[in-house]
Structure formats: structure tokens, C-alpha cells
Image 1 (tube, rainbow, N blue to C red):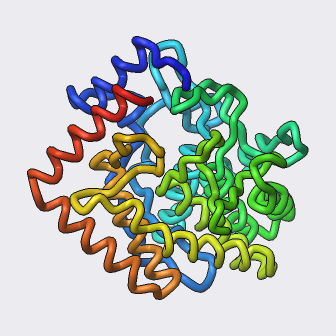
Image 2 (image 1 turned 60 degrees about the vertical axis):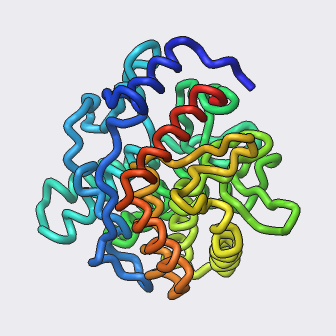
Length: 325
């Protein structure tokens, strides 16, 4: 495990204890289910991303949003944030017919096409070009199942709206990452029970970050909706079963876990990620019809109504960050 730096501890204290602004907090919005999204065909994305569509931060000269991580990281392109900005504008374009929203959406689609690059195994990925402090420091360039899924979700919609083959070609190239295990340059991991995971952070052993797995799974689902390729349907179905079987492992009784860290003190979800989990599970219920997703979402929703639960989760989260990552 990488020894955390003083700057890291300052960011943790700012985000979780002092309530300040940091790269851990400033991109978050209120998670919201998009009730206009269709569960059986490509249309509006499953979450609204309205606040992200109106991102008030830094943009480059071409209008691509960048995140200011402050300190030594500074301003960086984050493929996940860029795709979510594009998906938010896509939703608003379909809702309002605003040509500016359409232009922003296709600007992001073009960026995703231009910035897809092969990793050392020849798999096409969207790289993060900066180091990221996690359990093990992720050294640039690093890629993520979350970025792969969000990028695919945007590109298959761009292809639907334009019939431009560049978008589908890039989505198809990125989808290969879900068909290959981590050891072969992909983002897939099969555990000892045969359950299939898509990993947000590529570390060993894997940590199965819940929100990243679900968002990545939506990308696989969207690719299947767009192509009807059987391999996509199989991967999606296996991922859904993994989630159904493993969901109880994220339930502390008073709050949800962010990941399966394997540490003595578990990594409890922050208030934002706990709310995100609830919204993601409600979307999963809409996509699959599985009642368990709604039942767990209802249970976790009740946890948020207790001040004791909220305070306990905050203390657990801060202690974990200070002691482990």
C-alpha cells in the first residue's frame, strides 16, 4: 500500500471533517433518477445529470469540461466527468430541442472518439493522465470500467442520433475492455464464486466499488440495446446476477459500503455515495424488474432519516480514510 502524503490527509480532512471544497466533493450533484428514460430502448440516460450539464467550472478552448483538482494535480481532463457532462446535455437536448445542448453533446462525442487510445494490451480505453491516490496509487495513464461504461453510453446515443459510424466504431472498440480480464488489459474480474465484476479502479486484489460497477454495467446494457450482440447481453446478465448475489455485502444495517476493501474497518460510503447507491438501485429495478433492488434502496433510504446513522457513517468514513487510503 502506498503511504499517504500530507496533501492527501489535508484533502480528506477538508472533504469529510471540515466540509470544505476539494476534488472529492466539487463534481458531485444531487443524484436523481431520470423518469423519462426508457428501460427497453436507447433514449434519455437513466440519471438526469442536470447539474453536471451546467457545470460552472473550467473548460478548455474547445469547450471540453476539465476538473480543477488543485494542488499539484491542477486542471485535468477526467473522461468520466466529460461523459457525464455530455449525457446531461443529451437529456436536456431531448427535453428542450435546444440546439446548444445538441452541440455540446456531439462535442463530447467527438472528444471521446479522438481520445480513445490503446493500452499496453491493445485494448482501446479512455485514460486518465494523472496519478490518483487510492489504496495503491494509480499511476498515469490509468483506465477504469466506469469511464468505459459512461463513454459507451454516450457514443451509442451519438450513433443513434447521427448514424455516424465513427461513434459506433469507437463504442465497439471500447466494449472489448469488458470482454477481457484485467490481466489481459480489460476491466473484467471473475471471483472465486464465478461472479463477474467490472472494476472502477484496477488494483489487486480488486475492491468492487459499487457505484462504478453499476455505472459500468449500464454501459454494457446500452451497448446491447444498440447492437443486440449476444456477448453484451450475456455480460450484462452476469453482472446483474453478481449484483443481486453480492448486494448484501454492501449493507451495514445502518448505511451502505462504498466498496469491498477487505480491511478490518470497512469503507463506508459518504453521504453523497450512499444517496447515489439508492438512486442507482432504483434504476436497476426499472431496468430489470428485480424487486430486491427496490427493497434495498428503500432500506438504505430509511437510514438517511436517522441523524445517528448519518453521524456514525461520517465517523466511520473519516476514520477509514485516515487509516487506510
